[in-house]
Image (cartoon, rainbow over all chains, first blue to last red; front, side):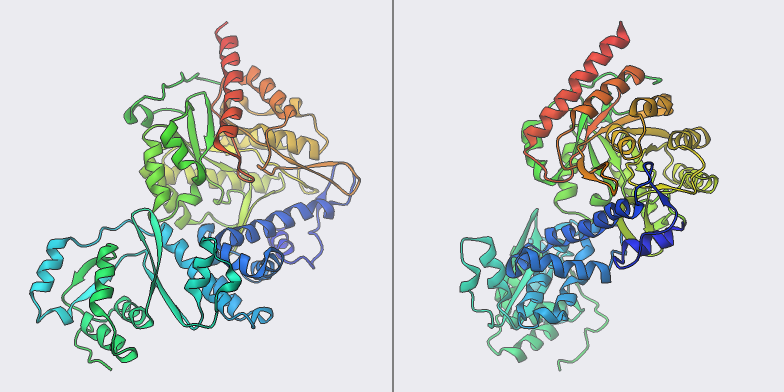
Length: 261
Length: 300
């Protein structure tokens, strides 16, 4: 028996049990091999169920586990760090035909995965008030500054009511009462030990995404203003500072001279 | 059993816990749902054990709480993903992560399994069995030698719970483990529940099995609960579930083991259907009283 054959049979329930297995009482070892097969697939489904609680609530446990089973067989883990096993699950959901009528499902899964990333991200302090004051004092340079955002921070922007759906699960509100087809966005980050999901306008989400991809404050703000002329730059910067989400200010940006599009 | 460690008072400072072995007392697996309870109540336990892979993350609450708990307790780091029984080479990046974790928390013990869990690029998230052959023996010994070299410390190897045997096997499990210990100098993490589960599943006598193990190398004991199933012949097939209280038969086998080893650091393992902390603490106290009895027998 090679481990290759053993592993292949674990990950394909249609394959027979590997050859070369025995049992002390002469019973069919295939029945015993099923314990391993079951351990592997159930542990993977359980890992996804732990990570995607709201997604599971939205479709029900039975459906969720069937969907997770298909994902696990198609995409078994390639890392020993099971906390991040669900990284590809939102994209899988998005292209999973049985849930084509639930466009918000992949968005909610994306938000839940962002929370896991935020939970385990590195501990980095936000910039201090002195550094902020110094940056604000030099108004001419301010638009060319780049910012480094906290490693826990990510943005989810969707054509669905992803934030309301997720929030409804956290409290007494009935999930069924949420109108699902509203455009929503959130910034997800960890402040101290607590992961937070903060609803933001979609222009602010675009602003943060631009900063994350290296744009200067000026360029990112210009992008956001194109989406929404009333984009509140001070509001979103205040929020990021209040959440200690800006961890460095960078003066020499490689693309600082990029003109706004 | 070469040394009998003395129980450390729970007020013992960090420095005194950094050196030496785990105390020969009972300990619990550390679960995130119990972080705060542990820090608020500082229960009288010998040590905590973590699964290495759960803490291979950059930051956040896991490291925050583990650092605090480590300052009060001895620590065992137990790997579940190294795939020591694997046909392929050990994953160097994973060994690097282990080395980093060990350097950060300075655990009293590091242990892994006689099993494989990865194949090529796929992690199977289970502890899988290997045939007991000369080729497997050579591979496992090479891997353990490499772990010893890379981590600069001696590891304990845990005996597995298995559900099938292999026609290709040419050695018994106890002879295999004895030979690994002899060749590599690694210690034995004696999982008494695994002994009971495997012996039931393969028609062996668990007491005779315990007596055939290299008990002088035993550095730690694991106790856990199992689930029951049946094989194709209708015979009992026990599953190492870590999801139930420890069975009376396993407590009895534990007592039998302690009579031969003397007191050893003993972990209560519970990874599924995790109950309130007090329930686990009660099982740890049950183990502790058996440890105290065995200590008295050694002294007499």
